[in-house]
Amino acid sequence: MHRLEAKIRAIADFPEPGIVFRDITPLVSDPAALQLALYQMMNPFLGEAIHAVAGIEARGFIFGSLAAWELKVGFVPLRKPGKLPYDVHTASYDLEYGSNSLEVHTDAIKPGDRVLLMDDLIATGGTAAASCELLERLGAKIVGCAFLIELDELNGREQLTKYHVHSLLHY
Picture 1: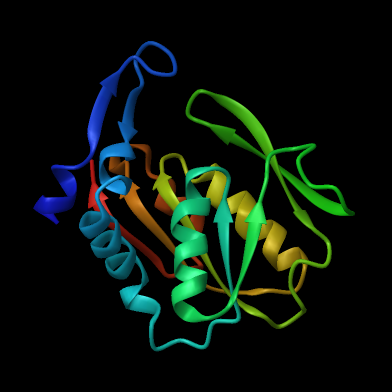
Picture 2: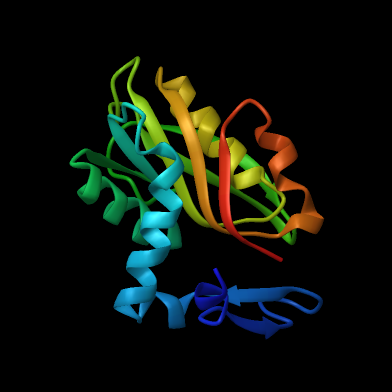
């Protein structure tokens, strides 16, 4: 994991004072690091039956779409409001520095589909919890939640206690 940690850049006071942004751009621009991160994120779930991978906008699309391709399953984008052109379900959530909402197409998955949720980072857990809520509203069974980075001091994992949560890097 040290190899991956070396590819994460810390940017102070972004997007606002007091926040340390964990920039994954150096990691995703390095093919070997990106592949290592993806496989390590997926590893605990490889024995599971998975019908789809859901990714949270925007950086979750990177890992989620690659994982869906590797697993030979479909990808479900969870988007910010107003980005999806069809009928949607919406869930709101709080961030460590504000609030937002996510949307998913009402026909993105079938009831009973087993879904792996992926994102680059879990902080307060609000985004991931809202994502799981949206998927479950469609009838999904959440196989687990995989994150590249977990900000431990924000206790986001506590919002996901009913799911298998796997994070590679802890700050």
